[in-house]
Length: 366
Ligand code: ATP
Image (cartoon, rainbow, N blue to C red; front, side, top):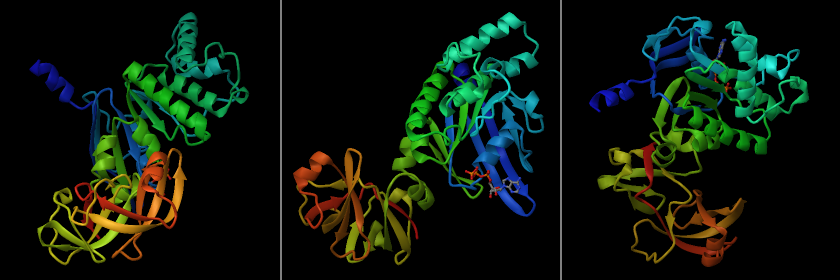
């Protein structure tokens, strides 16, 4: 028992102090990251944060200028791509246009000189796996973008690699295909148990498929956590801003974890564990769902009165922008279901009484 836990605790992929410079520009700076066998990890961050560079270093397509990598206990730091154990899917489908789908999928297998009949059977099994049975005779140009990306996925999985690397594989697809394919990739990944890293700049994509998300910013990791941790407990103002919707309130720290925003005084008993000297400027982050409507008297913690300025529909919910008394120029975004809109009379110009969930507020230096 103890032994197997020990084995499981050994990371499948381990990155230590990975750095990458392009001339004088530092694209990655001291990245440490451990990924467990079978995990689905997303690298998430804005354009230019270094997520693609990090993926390419793991693939050996780019050489790090500092640090080491181990995969399944093997030091792969200086191994050329062909000697590493991974399959990769790029944003552009990158299929060979003059080869059939079957030949595209078989590409890595033929290189390994397997018997023809065995290759053909394996190719058909892979095409079935990605939902394209019997289409081996077609050419890439005869397929839609989503289908081509399934073929690219089948090709990446052909050699049963230990690691699947996905570099923004869905970003060229339209919204509906994109959501369908991401769910299929997730289901396939679970079924095969293959350790997977997907690069994306789409937070919704990362939140919906990842076991853990690595949020990157300007060449460093800001936070590593489950989707719930990243959303509920952002570790920095950057993460709170980048993932999910949030209202940021400018405030000033007072003793005993009280904060003053405008003339509103809020006590945040947790304040994400941070200590601030009185007078320090801070930012308070509030998610739109973190509000209380029922039985909110003036003495309720976080009690506010406000006027709805604007209502925006977002699918089955709405976001109301509320100008709060004592908080001029810092409107708060609150979320309501359509039923709650009726119940609480949420519409433009309506007066609302509510409380901010001060237990959920995150506080960061301004
Ligand atoms: P995107 O989503 O736009 O692809 P990214 O987070 O994947 O962004 P990278 O492609 O990893 O970002 O690039 C990180 C930084 O390194 C960027 O500022 C980029 O301009 C720079 N960079 C990447 N490759 C090179 C290169 N070959 N030469 C010089 N600079 C580079």
